[in-house]
Length: 74
Length: 259
Image 1 (cartoon, rainbow over the protein chains, first blue to last red):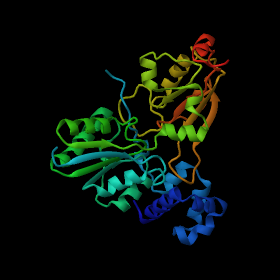
Image 2 (cartoon, chains in turn yellow, blue; image 1 turned 60 degrees about the horizontal axis):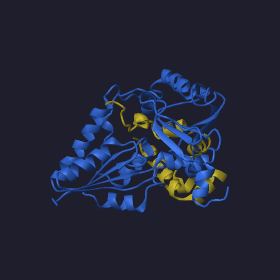
Image 3 (cartoon, each protein chain N blue to C red; image 1 turned 135 degrees about the vertical axis):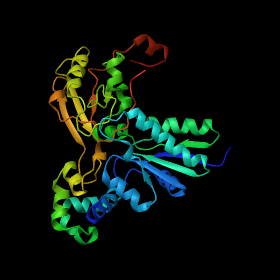
Image 4 (spheres, rainbow over the protein chains, first blue to last red; image 1 turned 45 degrees about the vertical axis):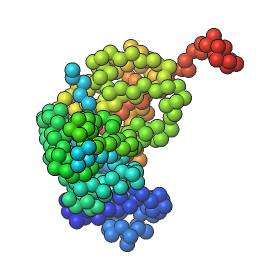
């Protein structure tokens, strides 16, 4: 994982616990440039993209499909 | 009680946002933290808080038996517990919902004389109720793992809601990297559902979001339209009731209810 991935993950963690920050991000992503440490391009990508784009920005990871399941054998 | 303990917790589905204070405190208090999460943001967040935490992701590779991976998780958890350490294991979602290893590890730890506990957390079902704005108490709610639903011929009451888990992984017992593990299984599932519901009955293919910048994936369709939806291993099917169940007037009278 790159340093950029870590910065994006840190921003995701902050957004996930702060509805006010999330609202500001939705209204104007670029206003969080300094707080997030992300570039305008990265903020636009996060604001406009879906989960696949976020995953790409995070550097991608096969663990996205790492489901935990009961098996039905037996 | 022997020295050494195990607590299993859940991280929910939104990086840090659904981790309960109780779970976070347990992670902080542990001598050793293990985790298994579904995407990289949560992993990076955990690693930033707990640099010594160990991931279980290395136990999964394409084609591997899931059961073998789950058994290895249990064994990895028990090794430090037997050394007298206080161990915490964090799984995404709820640690007691669709997580074989957490239940097995708690049972095994207790059987060996160690303290072991499972803490509640936010499950995919909790996210579904909130995101679809449906109340499982309104008409009742039946919940089955999709493969189990098919192979055991579960009886469905169409007057209650139905939840089917893992509709993208029907009949698959190994781990795979691809998104949809069994496309053919969806057609079989639809055939089974059409024995209970009209093909035109509404259904929702749902996926909770992992990221605070993304909305949950909510695909409103019909029973017949399920195979046309974007389905992956995280997809859950919600089927609303056909109609309200008929009222038993005599029972209502016995209970003193006016109908």
